[in-house]
Length: 293
Ligand SMILES: [Zn+2]
Image 1: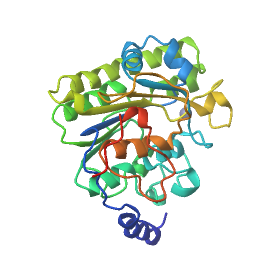
Image 2: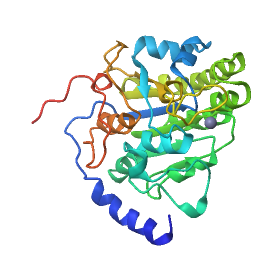
Image 3: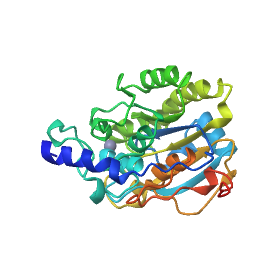
Image 4: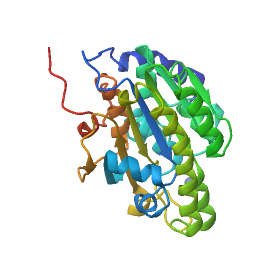
């Protein structure tokens, strides 16, 4: 994206994000944790006690789907902006500073515009393309390792004001490319990411207002062999686990698309789905709809 089109995108962004806040919000905090390259069956098979506990205590869709371009930057962009790749324009998968930022407002941008606190803790530089200027109070890329990412996120979450926090762990994807998806080393990488997730959940659950948190654990894409990015079901299927006091418990089969994550995060904070967003709030994560006044 050149300077002119970025300026245009930023000028348009507030217009695309109406300031509509529902009278009551289901939660005060949303934490989206993305396990890069984690297949649903990988999550099930790995030694991942925190993911398994949240699945048991929460709602889980084990055949959720990512977008057709099942690569890291395109799919995370859809996860956080709630639109397909053709709408957000992030159709490449490397860090290209000259290409600017995502061209639609992300859920974090919309929430930030309404006064919520927003933060991203990531382990890959290319995710900077999603950190739209004006969308974040905190951008953190401490290290590639999930231990460092989780430590920074946990420190923030211990006292975070109401808002959206995005956390990204890259180990499953790294191991998938190196050793093969669903191989032993890949499952060990999910187990390692789960220990990092445990650090994050300890910070959330230590808070007096922990019942005001919605945690969504998901992935950007799956993989097969040593790759991903195709339309194979192994690449497209992702887990989608929601944990929070208002969640309707149990595994469920209703279709969930990664774009629904953005819409659900906003709805959790009482924010209506912005026009143009094609994702839909997952009601099972939010509890009974608030009565209209
Ligand atoms: Zn990858």
